[in-house]
Amino acid sequence: MRQAGMALALTFVAAAPAQAHPHVWVDTGIEVILDAEGRAAALRIRWDYDEFYSLLIVEERGLDADHDGTATPAEKRALNGFDMKWQEGFAGDTYALSGDMPLVLSPPQDWTADYQGGRLQSTHLRRIDPPVALDRPLTVQIYDPGFYTDYDISFAPVFTPILPEGCRAEVLAPDPATVDRQLLDALAEYGADQDVEADFPAVGAQFAEELRLTCAR
Image: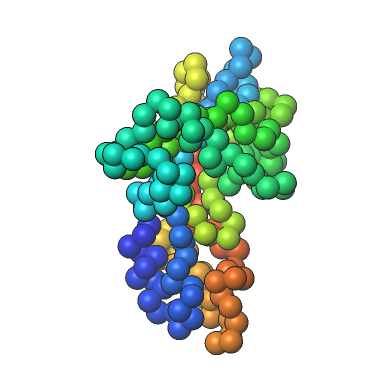
C-alpha cells in the first residue's frame, strides 16, 4: 500500500486535517467472469481491510470474544454483508470501461465475509449489464473518489473459467511522485480557515490502480 508515501507527502501540507487521509486501507482482488460467448459478464471484487479498521468493526459488533483474530462460523454469519449497505448512488468504488465507454455494474450480489489473521475480508459480485465483448480493452479501476479509502490491487487477477487465448492482463499503477504532487497542489488551494477534512479534494481517481485486459483482435 501507499501509506508510507502518502504520509511523507502530507507532512509538507500546512492544513493538519489533511494528514488524516486516507483513513482506511484495503487490499483488493478482481475476478473477471466470462460467459459462454467469451464476453465479460461479471466482476467479483475482494476487499481485505487493514488490521486497525478490522478491529474497530469487530469490536463494534462484539465479535471475536477470544481475541484470536479469527471468526467462528457463527461470527462469519454475523459479519456477512457488514459492508454491503450502500447508499443510493454509491458506485461501490469499482469502475469498469470497455475502451473509453463506462460500463454499467449491478448492485452487489452474492456477498461473503470472513475474519482471519486479524483482518476482515469480504467479496461481492457485480454483473456487467449488458455483458461486453473483449474486442476493446477492458479496464477495471478501484478507487474512492474522496480518497477516504486507499485501495491497492494486491492479488493476482483471476479469470473464470480461464484467461482467453490471445489476451494479456496487467495491473497498472500511477507514478507515486506525480500523484503526490497533484495532491499537494490541490491541497494548496485551501485556505487556513477551510475544513480540508470535511471537503477533501476528489483526488481518488488519480491514485487509482487498474486491471487492464487487452485481447488480440
